[in-house]
Image (tube, rainbow, N blue to C red; front, side, top):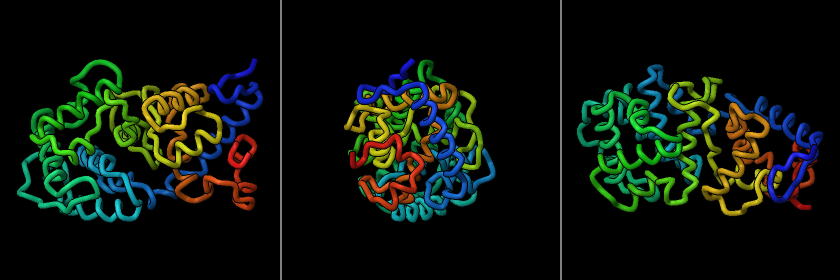
Length: 283
């Protein structure tokens, strides 16, 4: 029987099987070798799980903008927290006076770090705080975001941008990336820290690379990278891997980051791409 992936494409079982095979191969191809280009390298630098989850939250929520500038900023910020960011924030560090970053002022970042520290003092860990709310993973993202907003004690535009709410229709890319990092098994990329969220509950984090490639592959019919886009894409990938639909996220993102996909027809590049038979770019 044909497999309906979305409103643009109806794939035969054979076509769907071939695409699944190529996505699996892509997931094997892109892995720990690409860590130097990905913010997940920052939490992976710590040995202790509590430090990893705190560094993961800080790194994920500030992971936007130019890759190099973002990496440089996170490196400097985490260095200020010392060898144990969880301990530094939980005990209430002296004023760090962090630099501003794009939409966040230094005060916004200071308030965010202070809020993380307060949550650690109140709950012991970020996973424990996340687990106090029942419901879907999205419900619990909303609750943790609101908990951090309240603890920050400010509603500045920069702070609200740093802690988006799913209820506002955002794809919440950085939140879902954080959950992918801490909830998927440790495969050399993701961290395997939390047990309160199953990988089957995760939703695809949508960056510009993933959005462009997903549309070109017919995995979604939507063009706006909003919440509905993320839901539709995840449903398409769940048809291939219901127990772990975000296993393809790192590979699809780095297909674009590495410029192995340019987002336009480049004959030499496209001919070398294993996904070319399924791609609509330039067609």
